[in-house]
Length: 256
Image (cartoon, rainbow, N blue to C red; front, side, top):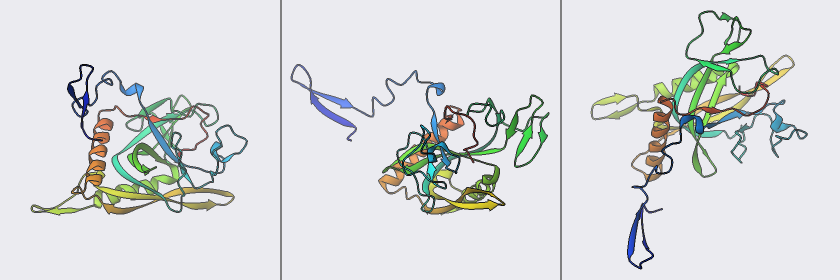
């Protein structure tokens, strides 16, 4: 849409509507607590979206697919999801035991609490009986439904290894200009996240398999637009004004 639209006012004369000049108006009092970012997750056998008898069942949902509440599209894990990564961070959300708490953590720690005792799989037990779990959060633009959509990908437990692989891809990306080689912003490339199956005894689950698809070409309008939107998302996250949107259900460990 053009940033300026010319219309006739009630007096019959021409008035210019400046869409860019009015940007942000009407939303000045929307605070970080008033907005949230949907979480993309890998579906597994116990996910309610895969259970036809569950109210949250999603038609066609299967283990290994990628899904987020608010997105109408299920992403085939074999094809993967293309994303532009705006911001990567590691946090330690505090949980009550699964099945006993809501799906949202009761708090989030920047570091491992000093009184926490290490258990396994990135978990640390607190004196109050809760546990904190090392989690890598990737704030992204998910390229779905013909448009880039802000989302969060939370990786923990067995997905910490793919998280490190993805961070390595980001840190190892190099551009070259007249001054030499440099590591560009995380949102300078498109990455793909497929899912692959894992088994251990009778247990089976899926993890992400990251790869880099291509670098953004900011000389092209579409890529430049994605770069700018991702840059804005990164600034929002850095200010603490973007939060994951946890679903209002029991903590079943869906975010893996």
